[in-house]
Figure 1 (cartoon, helix red, strand yellow):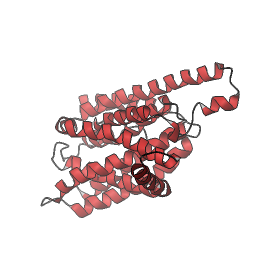
Figure 2 (cartoon, rainbow, N blue to C red):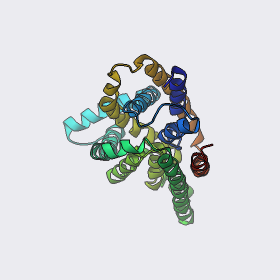
Figure 3 (cartoon, rainbow, N blue to C red):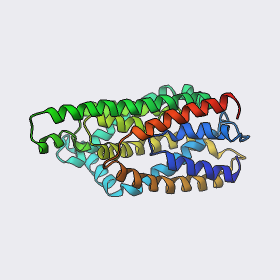
Length: 290
């Protein structure tokens, strides 16, 4: 991989990671569509992508630095006390409950998951599946909103039905975390399935995005500890890859700021349509070697 290609991959990763369109899917598909010479089956490819993800995690830590300080303090306070008394403590434990499923599934299926990164056809197919998942999440959410609108409760109480992340159940947090594990498949968006899971758990779109972004950070950092040391082998341009990771972080920070504003009123539907179309077009281009 040339330095220019590494920087392009960093920009692509950072720009698409937090959007519900699967950065991993794009990172596997686009090099094949551009007929680049490096192979996604190379043993350093997945560690390189994880390094780019660490740039994203750094951006999220900066964006949510005040919340993370409160979350870390809340975690230790609740653990030492043996009870939860504040919203920050509850959010810390919810994030723990959401992180465990992805960590466990990642350990057990690591080898099988990595083999999928060598196939742009698989990534394009999963990108289509991701699109239908996003459309399905919004369909189910609209049904819930219609039920709330038909309820006899006052408007203010109806709005409270779709509330803050700190109010979801631990079971819901674990389910959202299990959804996050689907993102190990290239083409399935981590932010897409976790935001969708948050919507089904009763969160507003903006709160579902916030919980998704917070939930991503510990999983990405853990993956970095496992994968990135493999880049220290001889012949790997670590400095160039780190530069790409920094660019990824800058792009991810801008993307996160945009999405948090977008989800004040926006939905997942446009991204669902994009994923279905992009996946089908990619499959056609790969099939006919265009």
